[in-house]
Image (spheres, each protein chain N blue to C red):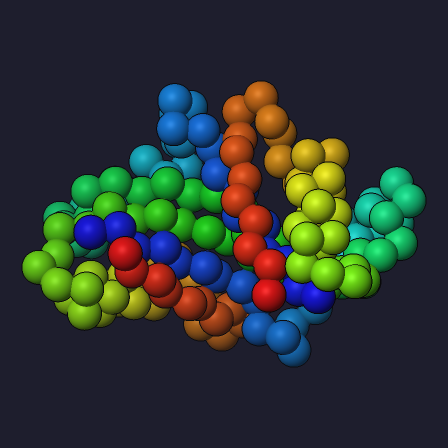
Length: 79
Length: 79
């Protein structure tokens, strides 16, 4: 099964990379872009018998390796 | 409006970062993770009158700045 994991900085954490992209877009003339947050995106190909099992495995992997739970949160989609 | 942009390496492009994560997961005992691809994830807060306008703006921004169209492809979701 395929799981998608989206890792983003928590809203309270400053995102300098996103801010830099936002400034660059304003310089390029895209004043309509008010805010940019950058995160990480992972596609996992998992051996799991059910969607629930795949979600549990992806969450365990995200907790241990993909995200830093102190400053980042993550969201999982399974298909 | 909020647009989400997912940027991934094209399937034909080798992803050394994903391969390293996969190897690390196998070392940690997660043999059920067959494949990992890493990409980038952007949340854009846009001034746009409609979902179509937001999607068009996000696509333009992705083409110009967020993705390298030679080796990367992207997908956009608008909400």
